[in-house]
Image 1 (spheres, rainbow, N blue to C red):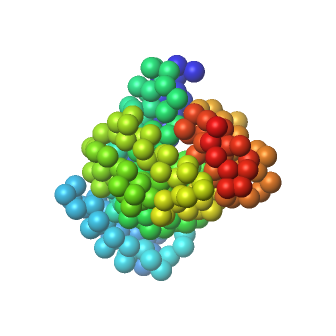
Image 2 (cartoon, helix red, strand yellow; image 1 turned 90 degrees about the vertical axis):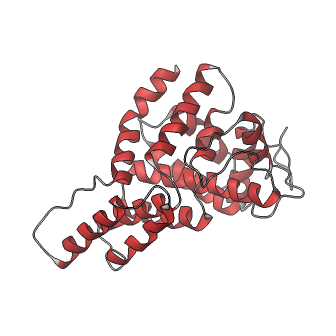
Length: 262
């Protein structure tokens, strides 16, 4: 598929996620305590300054006690924004993968995943939980990719392998060198870096395979690697994780213990 085709296929996802993150969550129905609180949370989220995305966390106080789909959309959005996942960051990620696809590089999927990293890692795992409760495949897709990317970025930061990439800065560029260093931080399976949580990565991959990547309209470029990582894993999240990381590095997992990329 061409880079333009890839972007056209994902345009609705980009726009829908961007709308949610920037505040276009529709609150409907009769006046009630919940609808009023959701409106307050939305207003709070709209006013988060670009100089302090962590301030979005304060908006959670308005919706923490609710569990409706609209409440969980807002909780999911709050965690995205608090972790630095803005519309500009999403746009930059898609520009990067379009460039990689145009240049026929093997880093397309890895670039998307790492570009969506949130800080701290807890924002990604919290967003994953809330996004899953919404039942919306687009949010489930994005949040699970964010968990994978955030886990890798967190481990790379601990190992000093982030290079010039800054997950805290939505405008930070991700070079090929930085990308390779981040992904390979956790592919030394005999002696992985601190924070290489294979179980969390594997669980996120399984969730993607069972939900978004099981649909007829799934993104072939990402889902091919997701489904290939799950295949032959025997249901072991750690094996799923190791298979995916090798695939993102343009290699394959040898299936051994602890195994390696070949």
